[in-house]
Amino acid sequence: MPSAVMPTPDRDAAASAAVSATGLRKSYGDKTVLDGIDLHIPAGTVFALLGPNGAGKTTAVKILSTLIGADGGQASVAGHDLAASPQSVRAAIGVTGQFSAVDGLITGEENMLLMADLHRLPRREGRRVTAELLARFDLTDAAKKPASTYSGGMKRRLDIAMTLVGNPRIIFLDEPTTGLDPRSRHNMWGIIRDLVTGGVTVFLTTQYLEEADELADRIAVLNNGRIAAEGTAAELKRMIPGGHVRLRFTDPAAYRSAATVLNEATRDDEALALQIPSDGSQRELRSVLDWLDSAGIAADELTVHTPDLDDVFFALTGSTDRTTATTVPHQPKEAVR
Amino acid sequence: MSSLSLAARDSSTMLRRNLLHARRYPSLTLNLLLTPVMLLLLFVYIFGDALSAGITGAGADRADYIAYIVPGILLMTIGGTTIGSAVSVSTDMSEGIIARFRTMAIHRGSILIGHVVGSVLQCVLSVVVVGAVGVAIGFRSKDATVVEWLLAFALLVAFSLALTWIAVGMGLISPNAEAASNNAMPLIFLPLISSTFVPVDAMPGWFQPIAEYQPFTPAIETLRGLLRGTEIGYNGWLAAGWCLGLAVLGYFWSKSVFNRDPK
Image (cartoon, rainbow over all chains, first blue to last red):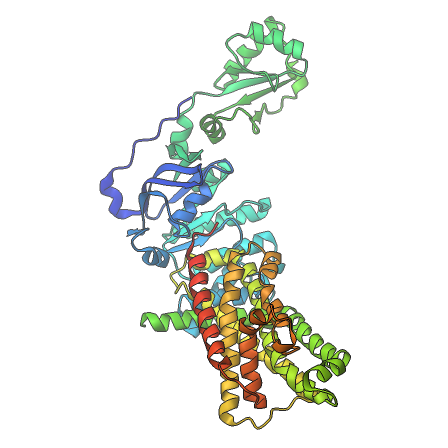
């Protein structure tokens, strides 16, 4: 499987970069969390850091947002060196963490006014910005209630609204939709798209491929503290070979005999599944089916798979466990017995 | 704005946040007031006769014991209130909002300063409440001049500040509220082994040095002297030294723990 890193961005563009990092490293004790990552994010774009749990996404955000120091490497955010001038970096960024960074003991409005005060806005201006953002994020009705009583989606919206009080040019969103229901998730996507329209650079981490595909201009796949691949969604999809037809068996004996006949198929002994390379076209599918019939193979389930980010992700992160697949439309599995 | 005025502005914002918490959730502060008030009533009305006889000789009445015990109870109130500060600092540090503050271009120390000033104000308020109970059951100052009253107030504030900085450090190293409450136990335990309830002379000989030189006893003796005209002696300087020492120690300790990378 290909795991080549895309060509490194040219250094001349560093001036216009919202975030650039070379060789960032971080370890806790003898556990290496980030093992030298390079990033280059042009201003005004959405960048997604994609990876499984424990890949080091949150650590990367913590370092780039000045919350913790790196053990090695160099990084600058908004043109300021992280180590040399953290306060200048802080003045340019907004951070919404994985765990809601709102004060649950006070109301939504008080949270907003707190941010306004900390950004040293004049009182009147602070009230105006607060009212405006609460309305924009549909929180006006809940403004006088303690934030601890908010639903997950509301807390996340308040969180982002608080981040926006300072009018940051670069926003870090650490897993902004984790734990949200589908509707809140789509709302959040809308919010993120709006931010980008306003010219803000967004650095987001996610474990959802769909989310990265939906939102990001560029995606980096982080695995075991290293960037396994980087590029646009299309570039990443091109990195893996075509799709396949997946045959799943319930009877181990049937699986074994099929595996012997279809010796070019990729075996997944645990799932009793075989993968036959295919581009997913009707013509190829028919020839596969004919071939299966003539070989006397009857799979219990057949799915056609076209390459998507999932393939890239699983290929790069070394997992064979396929969780999403495109089932053949209008074709009950009995039909292919 | 100069960096000092920025620090002052951010600190006052943080203070307002902490006061908002305290005002919205007063139960923690009120619970902490219960201990000194209960102990005051217990020692005066239940053990009072025996203790007053032991301290002031035969024929002493309850008023003498009330006069003896109240200064210690007031300082114990401060110790108890600062346990609440340790708990609230520890709880606060586990909240995401603190991570947010750390990534904002604000004066870093303001987060702790807000807690400290808020806690000192709470201490003063608690002392006033417990002091009012003391007055209600018959405590009166004796021949205290205005200067002595001011010095007494200054002592209470300085002692609050010193214990608060220590409590903030204890809160910062505690992973959760329970641990903070346990770590801060000495703040309520030390007054029990001070001259609050009985004079140091009445304790076993081997124990007297511990009771006499720990932070509470000099402060109690000083307060007693200021309000009741008893002998202060070197206790005034000892108390000032403890206040300064604990405040400086607590400040640098808290600062260094807070500036570590959060988990």
